Amino acid sequence: MILYNITFNLSPAIEEDFISWMKATHIPEVLATGIFHHHVFYRLVHHSEDGSVNYCIQYFTESMERMLQYERIHAPALRTKTQERYQDQAIAFRTLLETI
Image 1 (cartoon, rainbow, N blue to C red):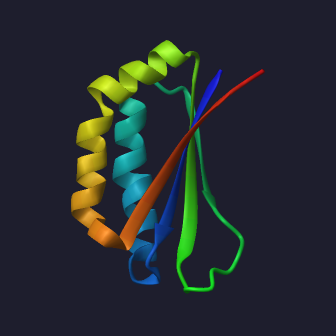
Image 2 (cartoon, rainbow, N blue to C red; image 1 turned 90 degrees about the vertical axis):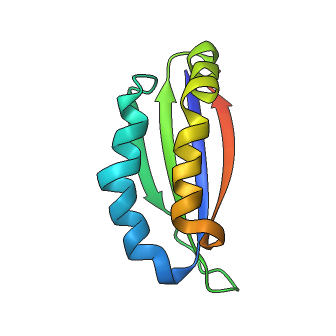
C-alpha cells in the first residue's frame, strides 16, 4: 500500500476557503481519477511561530505503479488548479510512504 501525503502550509486568511474548496472540489477531483481508494483530511494541531496553519491530506492507493500513473496523468493539472487558486498563500510539501 502507498500513502501519498500532502501537507499544506497556509495563510490564515485563506483557511476557511481552503477547507471548503478541498472538501467540495479538489479532493473529489483527486478521488475521481480512480487511483486512490481512500483519503483522510487533517488539520495539524500546533501553533506556528509565523501564524500560519497546516493541513494534511492523505490518499491511499494499492501500488507504486498506480501512484506513478497519478503523477504522470493527473497530478500536473490538479496541482496547477490549486496553485492558481491560492498562489503563495498555500505551500504544499509532498511525501510518499510505503507499507512494510
